[in-house]
Amino acid sequence: MLEYSLRNIENWDWITIVLVGIFAILSITRYLYPKRFHEFLSLPLTDKFFKLQGKGYEIKHLFNVLLFAVQVLSISLFIYIYLSITDPSLVQENQWLIIQIGTGYTVFVLMKFLSEKIIAYIFNIESTINSYLYEKLSYTSLISLLLLMGNIIFVFTIHPTKNMLLTFATVIAGLYIISLISSFKRNWIIILRHFFYFILYLCTLEIVPYIILYRLLV
Image (cartoon, rainbow, N blue to C red):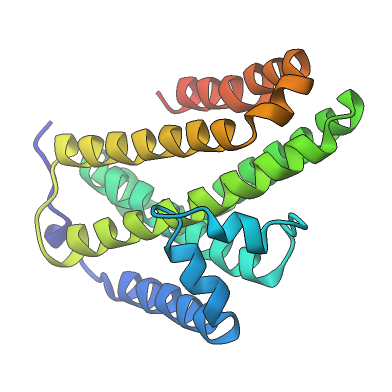
């Protein structure tokens, strides 16, 4: 199949609106929580953010909710761009595709989160899992900012190809795995106390869902 250029698709005004909306959310987040936002951006260099802001593991905090919204929009837009290259007819025929992608991703993440909380309660490892979930959410939100920059480049600067997008997605996935490993190392002593249950949780809810999702998409 010939690669399909994003610039051949008419009416990308709504994408500009989405990107402006993302930056508006980031601006609001930075305005409301300037210190916390600065520490969040410093995560690749220091874990000070987790030591100061993550003590209560407030996953439902407005700061995290706003960044999760950025995450949903950035990931949904990237998937939309990928589909624009690999299956342009689908994009042209379905004007609600971006909303469907965003809804699907949100439902997937929330259902996965709920399942993780239930399993943690059953195995009595809530404190361990809460810490892990908070760190994972923070890292994922940070990585979504890199994805946002990629989206801007792919829309306004270069003509992406399928291989280019797959390479970029692989880099993003690699960073996600590195962030998980970093979280494991940081909580290693706590994990060792519930090692069997944590491994069971990891295989059941951290690996299997993505394998199933991959099989459904491919």
